[in-house]
Structures are given as C-alpha cells and as structure tokens.
Amino acid sequence: MTTDKAYKAARRLRKQMSLPEVLLWRLLRKSSPPIRRQHPIGNYVLDFYCPAAKLVIEVDGFAHDTGDRPERDEARDAWLRAQDLRVEHLAARDVLRDPVGCAEAILRLCQADPQRL
Image 1 (spheres, rainbow, N blue to C red):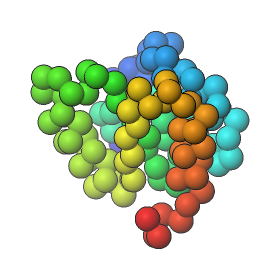
Image 2 (tube, rainbow, N blue to C red):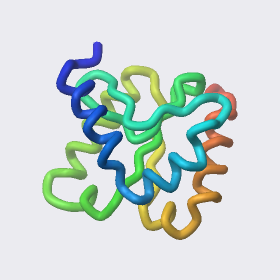
Image 3 (cartoon, helix red, strand yellow):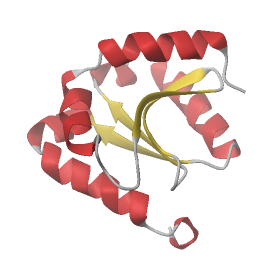
C-alpha cells in the first residue's frame, strides 16, 4: 500500500526532476507500453516505472554513492524485488552522455519477457 507521504513526495518530485530524468522523460512520455515518472509505491517514489513489465528504472547521480545512501538504496531495491518488481539502475552521467540510447534501452527492457531475463 502506498503511503500518503509517498504520494505527496511524488507530486513534489515531478516538479523537481533532475536534468537526466527530464531528458529521459521527454523521450519516454509517449512510449508504449506506458511508463510513469516519479511513481509512488509503498514508502518509495520510483524515478520511472513500467507497470506492464513490472520494471523500475532508477537514475543514480553521485549522491547515491555518499553517506548511508548505498545501504538505503540496497534496502529499497530488496523491498521492490520482494514486491516482484525488476529494478534497473542507470548512471546519471550515462543518461547525460546518451539520453536517446538510454531511453531505447529502457524501452527494450519494457518490451522484454520478464521470464527470460
């Protein structure tokens, strides 16, 4: 069950997306299957989510390497996987370098058979 806190955070984060997230969203917003941005689930807000593929895409900048963030990310990923979701991470620098290539990779993952991955 998604918490009210996560819903409110998702609304706020949609207005404050990072540059790599904005670049991807411009390319993914009309995709098929549909992809959602800043999607709340449980206590978390996912950068991108493809419900049809049960796929979570996280765009990780340098902040994900500092402090307790690696442990928090690991716990979050474990919880998401326990919900039967696939979790993939993209480095923000890769998105900045090649947003089209990253968007195409995401779309391939969304269209792939989860049983074969």
